[in-house]
Image 1: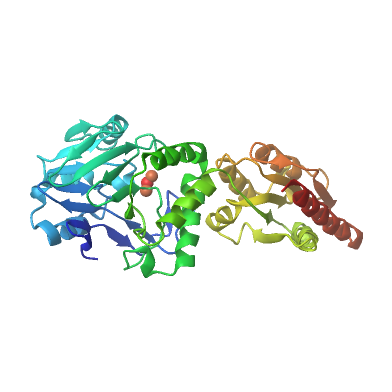
Image 2: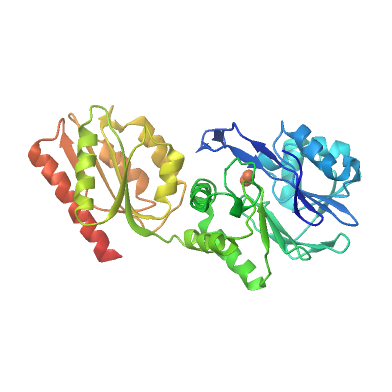
Length: 397
Ligand code: FEO
């Protein structure tokens, strides 16, 4: 992709990685690919907002040259966040503009040095500091833990653009630039998936930091994140969603997630779902070996209740759901209702194993176990369990 004009003097110079399918190691399945966004501001000084992932330097340099011909003309590099998807190209870019001043937090400076052994002419910024680059002034807003301790936002007062790095991102490879150029439902789906899989564990700080930014009363015409589309039409919607998610808000719906060996646990899962549906509660059933954990987490983000099932295998729950539950435990969710179920042959530890993991992120209700294959009577009991649980939900909402 070439450089794209966002508004007079401000360009998107990042890259689209159409083929990335596993982001963050294997924690995030990115079926729509990924973008690594960098931005170039041309004023009296030329400013590069963030670099990007190692391996894409050549395309970044080409895009910068679309705008300023000579990369050495960059006067300032702003490092909003040091995770390698935003800093991997930093050493190579720095070589091309060695006199550039670098602006970022002290934690970012320490991290960049540890990662790459270079930090350039680094200027430590604290939240609230600003930098005049001509007719524009850039304000730096500390946002530790959105996404890492080093993170900050950069706000261009003149342009009313918030460069938010990871916040408000989506993993969505597209040739479009702005939110109103793509399908809105699809965009919000990717934004929710991104929040659930990247930012969910940091809800408490996100809520506090967004409130602080809100109190600053800054006028935002564009939010330019470092992944995905730039928000210009739907800023209010994504802001509201971030407040909603960060406050652990939930819908009255249920995720039933299971892993099964010989389909007995699956039969139980289906009957539990039928019981929940009989009370007109929304529910989704996920076979954790077939559905992407990324999508399941996205559904669970604002689901009031989570129900987990596993057959017992070697005195443990099955391995794929074990991995998934440890992933979900990291969400540090609160206010969820949950119970465990599963089939077993002789010892039946899976249910207890599930409860041990999820008790710290949900309130547990009585569990349900069945030996070998569930009988008709036992399946009826599964139905009643689901129905009774749905009634509890109605009473608690
Ligand atoms: Fe997109 Fe925390 O990196």
